[in-house]
Each structure stands twice: as structure tokens, then as C-alpha cells.
Length: 448
Ligand code: SF4
Image (cartoon, rainbow, N blue to C red):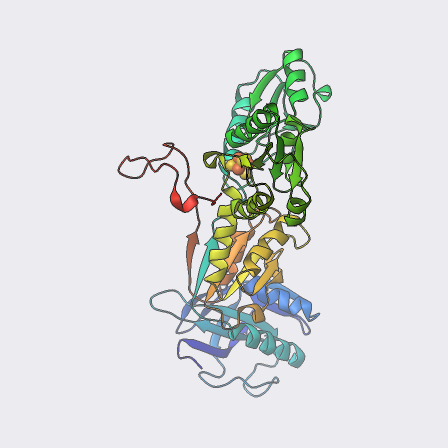
């Protein structure tokens, strides 16, 4: 046994545990080690629940060792008080940090409860160690959605009447500490709003007819359309206006795609994959492309190249209006996964965003586990894992990352690091620390 790891049975408990029940310590004091933090208590409680053992969690008082420094035997043997409780305890000390560990209190006469406690403690003690938690700093927001949030908050703050967002989903962050927008209506059509309503156009924009309808009714508009979306829409109209077919490079499932198609419905053709690129039929002298904002730039570059193989005179989208949000997210997740011994994706496994992020992590060859709650974490997930990677997806409850870090900190000293990738691109729109223009960043060049 590692000398910083101490395991024993202690007299005490005083939890009122009845035979057949176990009580997981939320904290206890170990003579000689002081106060022991038990942040991993929810993990142990879940292990007992899975075994069908009645369990509750409570502070535990622990007294003298029953078997100081010796391996723990099984059964309610010699030295245990006949009608008291025994605490099976493990603690881990590192440097000057407070001890962390676990304790489970069982009625002294409860041999099966004691066996269950020993077994669960065995499982979790095997993964007690110092660790690093590497957080992929991707919260699902992007510059455009953050700008939209600000517009929505301002509209709610300043509007005299009701406020409605046209054509959700609405990307209002739910991160802890972020003010929520109360009673915000989301409507599909302007017919659903009364006169005097302030209507917000979301980050992915609205159809031309919707904008015209709002103007005709004299409704106050707070336009939160992302500037990159607005530029892409303008490009579609421009290219269609000069008589070109416009290949929309990207996924049709993105909300912004409908806005783009609406700009010139008779002149656009979707290119979502290589098959679309090979099936595209257009006048070779009159073909342009626009990358759907929100679609990863690197994937778009592959599709643009495929189209250009067949249409060498392809014209299109300027680099400075590309959206790198999806690319940066994928890069961040991939980088964290590649640097980790195990990658945890927080969210609902069936949800599209969660599946997508899991795929990003898996592409690196990482071992990936999806957790919808900390109760899903198993000891085997952490065997030999020193660096834990984690990415939060859109379906994860806001508190899940904090809870995950908290229970991990109960499995040994934990340091937390965050990593993110942010591409900067643009002609003179960004500057480095010396105030010089970064202009079209070479590293951000998608290569078309
Ligand atoms: S275009 Fe990019 S930055 Fe703008 S809202 Fe869409 S994903 Fe966000």
C-alpha cells in the first residue's frame, strides 16, 4: 500500500445504521489524520445503490483504529463492538493538503453490510491518486451567440412592451452567474405577436419575408443577426444576382442554412458531402460557393476542393468572413482528448451535440465516456488515469462540470487546467499585442 494511503476500520459511526444498511460519510475525523474530506461520497453511494444495498449519506464520527496499519479482514470479528458501528475508512495524504478519502459506517453485527462496504471501498480506493483535470473550454457559445444574448438582454431591459424572439432556438447562456432572461417569448412567425412588441432577430437571422413583414407592421426590431451570417447572406444574394448558381457548403441541419437558402432559393445547391459535390450540376462559368457559417472550415475546405476539381472556375466566399466557431470547438475538444488518459463528455448520450463532441474526441483515439450525471462515473473509468479530459455539451445541466470536478477532487488531489483554441482571422480587424495588424492569419487560411 502506498504510504500516503491509509486504510483501516475505526470504532464509531454513531449514524444509527441498522443491519442491512450502510451510511456513506460526507466527512469524518480520523485520529492522526485530522478531518477527511469526502467529496467522492456520491460515487460510493451510487455504487451501493447499484448493488441494491440500502444507503444514505451523513456526517460520521469515527474513533480509534480497530486495526491500525494492518490489512482489513472480513466478517464482524474480534475487536468490534457487538451493538455499535464500525467505519471502514480510507484516506490519502499529499503534501500539505488536507486528507481526502471515504468512510462507510456499518452496524458492527452486519457481516454482509461490512462485506459490501469493504468491496465498494476496494473499488474506489484503487483509483485514489493525484490527478489533473483538463477542461475543454467550449461552452457551446460563440461570438455571435454572445452578441445575440447582449442584444436580447438590452431589448428586455429597454423595451416598453413585450419582447419576442423570432424563430428560436435562442442561444441565451445558462452558465452559473449569467442573468437569465425572464419570460422571453419565442415565436415562429410575426403573426403571433401583438402590436407594440419588440421583435428580436436571432443570431442565425430571419427570412427576407419576415424582415419585410416586421417593417410593414412598424414593429421595433432588435437585430441580433451575427455579422458573419449577415455577410454570408449578402454573398449569396450578390453571387446569385450576377447569375451564378451558389453552392452552399455545409450542413442543412444548421439553423442558419434556411436563412441562406431563403436569400436566393432558386439559385442555391447544397453541398453537404462529397457525393453532393460529385452530383452538382451547374454552368462551369457561373458557379460560386458560400460556406454556411457554423460549419467547420476544415471540412468545408475539403468539399470546396472537391467541387473545384470539377469546376476549376469556381468563385466564392472570402476568407475574412468565415466562421471558425465550429472549427475551434473541434480543435479544442480534440486537443484535450489527445492529451488525456480518458475523455469524459458531459451531456445526454442521445442528443446530437453530445454525439458530435464524442465523435470529435474519439477521432483522436481517446477513450471516451459520456456522463449525463456524476452517478454514471465508475471506478473502472479512472483506472490508471492521471489526466482526465472533459468537455461539456449543450445538453449537460449547468452544474454538471462543477459536480464532476468536485467528486474527482474526492479521489485525490486535483489540479484543474482549461484549454481552448481560438482562431483569429480578418483583414486589419485584429491586432497583436504590439498594435500591428494580424491581417489574414496564415494559420487560419483554409486553403482554397
Ligand atoms: S456564424 Fe459563427 S459566430 Fe456567428 S452565430 Fe454562427 S456560429 Fe456563432
